Amino acid sequence: MDLRKENILIVDDDIDILELLQRHLQAMDYHTYKAVSVKEALFILKDTYIDLLITDIQMPEIDGLQLLKFTNEHYPEIPKLVVTGYPSVEDSLEVIKSGATDYLTKPFTKSELKKAIEKAFEQNATRKNRTVPSTHTNLYSDMVGESAAFKKVTNIIERVKDNKATIIITGESGTGKELVARAIHYSGKFSREPFIAVNCGAIPENLQEAELFGYIKGAFTGANENRNGFFQAAKGGTLFLDEIGTASLAVQTKLLRALQEKEITRVGSQKVEKVDIRIIAATNANLKDEIKNGTFREDLYYRLTVVEIKVPPLRERKSDIAILTEKFIRKYGIEFKDRLVRIAPEALQILERYNWPGNIRELENIVQRAVIMCDGIIKVKDLPDILKYQINFPENELRPLHEMEKEYIQRVLVHTEGNKTKAAQILQIDRKTLREKLK
Ligand SMILES: Nc1ncnc2c1ncn2[C@@H]1O[C@H](COP(=O)(O)OP(=O)(O)OP(=O)(O)O)[C@@H](O)[C@H]1O
Ligand SMILES: [Mg+2]
Image 1 (cartoon, rainbow, N blue to C red):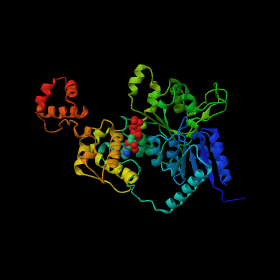
Image 2 (image 1 turned 135 degrees about the horizontal axis):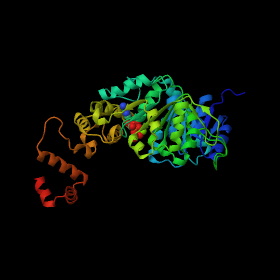
Image 3 (image 1 turned 90 degrees about the vertical axis):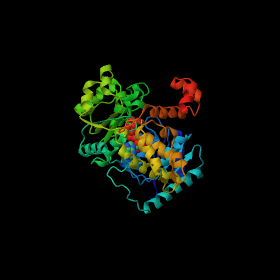
Image 4 (image 1 turned 45 degrees about the horizontal axis):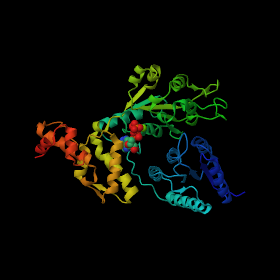
């Protein structure tokens, strides 16, 4: 018996590719495990020692990026290689961020595959030897903040992380709801169990039930075998149900039962299965309105809101902007510039004054872009104009109307890229008046 054989897990929804990969890998003397979906891959990862993960990106249900994220969090030591059909720019960026060592574009030759695998193993060996810098000053690794509003959130996390109480996280888009859910899971005592994130809004309504609760062979046309759902995949850990407001009424009914009785049934089956998971739901919709419209069950609402975490918008925690900016500069500085980037005080001031309708996600995107554009130090010119000409409604000292008017006109002009005719149209004044005001 050859004990030096490495275990390679290959994940692709295309059976032909799976078999091709398997043939190549076996010829190279590796031992292979095949999975046609991320869900199956999760089951294999749980029970098997895997030395290398090779995955496709575009797959129905959960995509490969989610799998990469999951392995990073649970099995950071496993090297990863991506095999993809048509890499889009965004995907490639995500792949790089996900820590995959390389990606192969289909079709690839056997020798290309061999090289990529050897490289993945090599890089992993050097990574293991390197000491990890301990820059993590707080418990929730990725989440930073020092404002009072943010501390309220971390206080609740501390209280709920070690038990399985149902939690709902509310807040505007881009405020960090998913990050809060991950922080609860990974800082608590069930962190070794799976964390599965499901965006209910991304699953067509008629498939939601089967996707979440699984189904049995013959349950509907096309159900050729028994399949697990996300509930089974998250066993023992946390199931994060994002955009819960978009769950179908059938799912809501089953969810209520899962919360009340701790049991579920697969689609097409009568058999009751016990479930032991923590459910964290999130929404940026107003569920109370949905209850009024009859699209959300009131009883489910009360079951879900046992613990509610309201994530504050960035404009209510402006004191965190500097520390968040610093975090993102470090993150993207290392990724894109291979050195530490800094920010000029005037540029930071502009970031701190802006009102951030898109919250932390918007801040992160703007910092990322600025890091790419800048020459080692982020200056005012590296920031988008919209930030510079935002009208700042005075908070303390009140200001005369003509000053506010001037700021507003400037902002409209930035929007029209200096086109005065268009600006006059938006402002509903004639061009002559605009010209006079500009003097
Ligand atoms: N406290 C924080 N510290 C650092 N980064 C954060 C923090 N909160 C959020 N982020 C970052 O902001 C971005 C948006 O966060 P996330 O996806 O969790 O928001 P969300 O509330 O789920 O948004 P949506 O409603 O659009 O789904 C992510 O890139 C996340 O890493
Ligand atoms: Mg989200």
